[in-house]
Image (cartoon, rainbow, N blue to C red):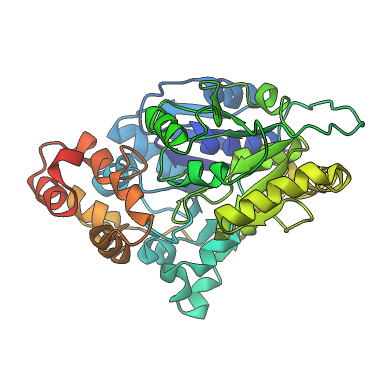
Length: 428
């Protein structure tokens, strides 16, 4: 007996980074007897790493389709799944494209705790709205919703461990090998990263870092100013995360308290490799780490220094935390967990009737309106007063920032005017 496959059409600007990895994990664990995954990429991809893997797993890719193709895809879809973050291409696509009636599931890849916020109207029109971390329930746009509307919200983490196993010796290594992999952009990395590291009073303490070139020179200058010029060992950008992690036993993951992340994929990968994570007491990280059980949670340079010294002095305890961290990931953050959770939500949404959604009426018709709908006005006041670290996201060049929107709509007068109000012109 032939079973009709339910067609899930994913709408995403690209398949890079954590989103690409998460969707590969979903397709890998999906029941091919019931679900067919089609990926509508709004833009032509620059990198093909996850595209090739999705195709190998049985996913279907449609890249930069025309308006007629989009209408046909949406009409034939049993469920439309928007991979949501405040990318300008997403707004342009859903607000300018004619959309047939649909069942809508949104998988949200930002926390919404700061800019960018989660638009509450998107939650209201979705049949199912999935967060990637429970920390997002603290976001004002979700906390203020009526309880009935919150019923459609649930959490499906997009984080998974390494697909490549790292073999380590059971013997304790008395030497602490610490490192960091990720962005050097201060919208994600803590702006006082070097200050935290410099507080450690251990001879020859150094951490190895892999990442882009953004802020590298500034970080080097900060190390020199701290009197510890060799505090950071820059190892360039790497696609081979498993190999980089294999050289470490401690993962120093100190992020901006106002960062946009949720699932924190590289943190989960590090834990799966048996590294002991040291994180700040930020909401997203605290949803993953249990202090002194699966990692160490710190709150200041002095508590970070104490944590590092404790890891050096108690290697047996470090080993216990290492084992706990790896076991947690193996139980909780797996492709099969993602697959089962998503399919449960798919089956619920399939019981809904298709309905028409006018995204233009929700978000407006102008890029300036699209930008503002995800802007936290409190963050703007903090930028003006320079009172905390939330303003770094406003100065980013990507991640739905003003500069990102300007790169898509450089001639839009309202956006230009707004940019001049929000940012200093020499920062644009």
